[in-house]
Image 1 (cartoon, rainbow, N blue to C red):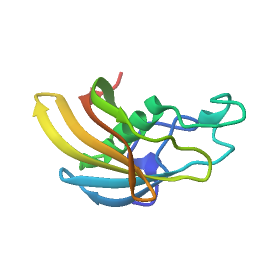
Image 2 (cartoon, rainbow, N blue to C red):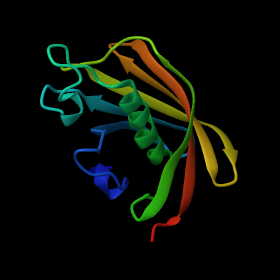
Image 3 (cartoon, rainbow, N blue to C red):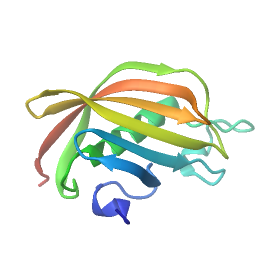
Length: 139
């Protein structure tokens, strides 16, 4: 996959996945986010000690989860319906290379739950289960 925007409906500045490293639709996705001083998500969070907000690490996992789907999600609706068991174990900031791994966990009709992990230099810094609502084409 050469262009993430061919598969994902998000756009700058809210596109939080930089590259897909491994993709096995329906099985597992490994993606990455390179955190830079110029990232809009760091502006003002916090002056003098920029940190990636934990909620945006969860959003990164949800965006990576879209690549579990075989077909692109552009033009379709996908919403985060629930965040379960989110744990934040260490901060992330400028210069960090975040590895995002997601795997399917359960399916309940149009709801799909994924288990995700954010790692930095091999350390687990965030884990969460996310319930996504997968819909038809957005109108």
